[in-house]
Image (tube, rainbow over all chains, first blue to last red; front, side, top):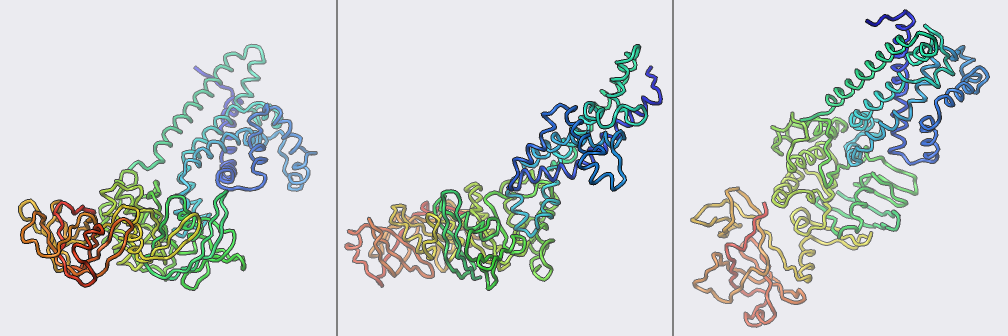
Length: 228
Length: 350
């Protein structure tokens, strides 16, 4: 029988919370970026593509370190925006959210784009000639038709968020009960003597959550599409 | 409807330069593939922007580069029917139909869902999704959706090109009737002459990105006789009666016998100009089932042959014969002759 300590439970809950918040926060941005990349031709499109996809190719530790430099007390965003607002991100669970969002963002954008690219441009043209403005077209045609991509992107990002380690440990630290997520807790168990069983138990929890999320994805994917 | 177009657009190596003013409610745009018909239509609809020029409809300017005026497509009230139906797959038939209607200014809402459903006979489809409709049903819903947005002009970009031949003429009569009943002017784009003749009165001819002229569909058909394809007589026959293996139809005040008829009250048939045989006098007994008395109203050269236009009662027929036959029959305008058509020469269109 699995027996978890209170800090293990908080690590499990925190992992889920961080992944959910990061996913929900990223959705509108992910959709916007995917929309811009799919339908708009503008200067700097390639630059945007590179920036969005950079976290996919960089080691998460590098992303974490760059984030630390950016949102830390002496960083550009930290000093100019967060400090005047009285927000301190570093070593809080919010920092873990930011790290997870940045690392998972390219996966989300890619999934949404794949969904959007399957939409026939003629459908968008039809909606425009039927009197719908561009925002109306986005809401009533593009969003419903990219719902599979939105679900896939969210699931992928959530799953990636559950496993986020490198960037999180740098910007949020590994504080039990505060910023310690499942991977961080496993890391701590593995690196301390006699923690193997507990590490394995948390691995089991991790696998269970992932499987449940993937099943949910399948189920939603089937349900969201009109089949008649 | 009066449409003024004076625009230029560069698309890669293709250059569109359209300059015309056209009045009429059933206007065709005719030209070969790649001549710029679809580009012209998307510029009028506002889906693409011209490089420079002016577009106006019924006194309202939709695009004017000198005034930097550009009305977006959603405010043009120009509906569109595409080559394929392009129905919204996530919506029911009803929601598809109402998509444009809901977005139409209430003061322009003259056609309602109920009247449209009645005219187009799509009642049973309303609450179904669109994925499992047949090709013909889909295109009907697409036409209904565009009509219900109460447009001041309907653009139809080869709406029949993706439809099976046997459905084509059903849909064409649908299109025409619906637009006539609801008084919607339209621009019908096609490279098929027969469709042009059924759908339109005035035709804009387009070649290599230029509008080269305005003619009637009938003139266009006669002009094309030079291409050795002959002329297709279109006959709308009504009130069929079955007599043994044949159908007897009314064609105006005449009666015609057709072998491949049906019980539909009204049917469009085609008869090739080369399938009509002319006689100087009544031949007494012939195997062809139709013998019509007519007056020659026009004789014209089609290049290799001679076209003879006959007035038979209320209807008109064009027969094509060789020069020698004209001399032998002593044909000239006003002469009365007999035209024989076999019952099998009628091809059913829909």
